[in-house]
Length: 133
Image 1 (cartoon, one colour):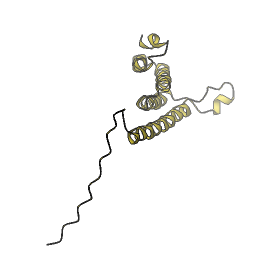
Image 2 (tube, one colour):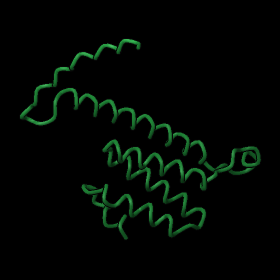
Image 3 (cartoon, helix red, strand yellow):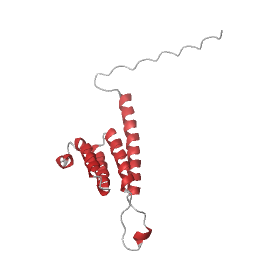
Image 4 (cartoon, helix red, strand yellow):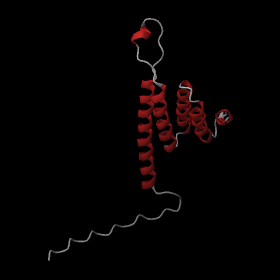
């Protein structure tokens, strides 16, 4: 019979802190929040790329067209990532952009749902009641 592998050395437990979460926990949360913010920024940039400004005249013939259907999805993903990172104003703004895209495609019920998702996040925003209507 083959010899058993050696046991791993027991890890010392971190001492409990009485004043709240430990420094390591705070550092992990900070890194996770930064990663979520980066992901949200990427989603927001993708949504903005799908919604270039409208052009008029001859330039409009060659310009990239807006795609609010796909942009709404990117904005909603950005809003959810911002909300998970506890960046409430950015999340509300992204939900509003998603709602505007849904409204542009005549999906008013879905636009209203996006605004309802933004309402609880806008606790300090004076426009909160406008979002929930």
